[in-house]
Image (cartoon, rainbow, N blue to C red; front, side, top):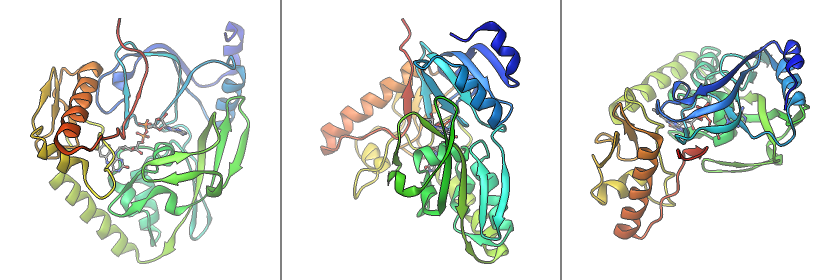
Length: 300
Ligand SMILES: Cc1cc2nc3c(=O)[nH]c(=O)nc-3n(C[C@H](O)[C@H](O)[C@H](O)COP(=O)(O)OP(=O)(O)OC[C@H]3O[C@@H](n4cnc5c(N)ncnc54)[C@H](O)[C@@H]3O)c2cc1C
């Protein structure tokens, strides 16, 4: 493992036994054995280079799509929020942004600059890194539609440029080289009108708050929509709106959202996920797949 004297060369913040409930929008989950918030990209590269090659790594943005089981994560969490926060214009249509920048900031900045195509990011409560990993999308827009290139870092701390053609990109799915994580992205957008783009952001946020329980702890849509249908419709049709296990409840406002009513454990949420999958399959023959990422160990 990392030698004690090496910590002197890191400038970030290393914590042990960190409660992941504090970093995940479901506000529940176990602890991470180690949690590192790098000072910047150079510091991150040095930290990664010092890790044992087999150390399990979990990259964390805003934790808005992540369930860490109650037994926690036996490895190192790398937290990017507010630290990999580069923002620079490469030309008047191309923004280079760090993976720890929030999606809402990217949407706001690009709209202000009179660019269109990234407004949909406004209501996604995650980081750019999380959006790249998930190909997050909403209202017809998807993250990778505007990606020109990304930079990734390897497990040994080497940074390299990758192109969209290096990835297989689908609906909420991105498959690419193993053991590489996003550190920046170049987003190329179309010229448009700043006021129109800003009005579109306001309209999308309003529509979201009317249709989604945005003020309650959740991870947004729990399941991916199956081809040609909506997970929320299937869950509602199976009579599961309001279904409760422990402190986890299927939202009455949007059936694809699972809410932490205040006392939910990660096990409650996972049990509700499995109940939904079983009931929906019995009811409609469709096996729903999770959109949320579930990691870590069950509590013993
Ligand atoms: C109220 C609400 C509404 C939502 N609405 C939407 C929506 O409309 N559309 C949508 O697509 N999603 C939506 N989501 C889900 C979520 O916000 C997105 O999936 C978002 O992209 C996750 O970003 P994050 O930074 O929170 O990622 P995290 O939850 O921290 O991580 C998600 C996954 O990405 C990986 N990851 C994180 N950062 C990196 C990185 N730098 N490099 C490589 N991998 C990384 C993590 O390891 C994990 O596997 C919603 C969530 C909530 C709570």
